[in-house]
Length: 206
Ligand code: HEM
Ligand code: HEM
Image (cartoon, rainbow, N blue to C red; front, top):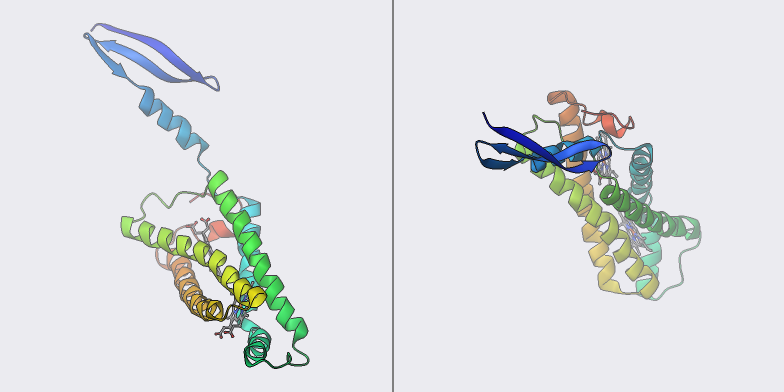
């Protein structure tokens, strides 16, 4: 068999491409070797920072859902043209502060998601489950930006329809969080995968 090969590229000391001449046919092995390099660089788990940000947002969002009566009362007074209710100030400003913090942390999470990435789904994950989880995560990210933004537009600019949108988005987020938690428990209890534990354990691979 007539065969000869020529190195074409060297990345971090690794041979990633070569031209093979086999019975007069030139075959490029570049794409297969490149794939190996890219796979080697894929993250095997979430970083400690990504995990800390995830749980910090969970705590803040939970607080927003449990303690919203004060801001609702303050908002109603504003709409009715009455003075703000006495004794509500601290909780009202906590809603505003925690909400803006969620916005800031969600932006940090998105930055890390894009720059660092996320671990791949388990190799035996059915395609439809991958699509559902990607869709739910994407929509949660969108809502973590849109919900505080709509609240801020209502609160700081006095735009009343923005408060209505805030109320709708809040219900949608609640629904998605319920689906998200059900998905995490399904992975853990039914599929018995490592997916749930990787949001607790940095760099854990599944
Ligand atoms: C992720 C962040 C946030 C969540 C989960 C959240 C959640 C909620 C919830 C559950 C309500 C009660 C709505 C209802 O019962 O219809 C509410 C009301 C309200 N929130 Fe937020 N909020 C967030 C961020 C913010 C921010 C950043 C602001 C302002 C800067 C804000 C301003 C308001 C206002 C003005 C209301 C009263 C609206 C009304 O009663 O129609 N929220 N929020
Ligand atoms: C306020 C509630 C929550 C919000 C807003 C939220 C949001 C998110 C988002 C946006 C992601 C995608 C991360 C990424 O790949 O960039 C994620 C991943 C994840 N969350 Fe949550 N989450 C919440 C609650 C929970 C709870 C209670 C659990 C545990 C039961 C949980 C477990 C997980 C796990 C295991 C992942 C990783 C999934 C995977 O790698 O495929 N989350 N979460």
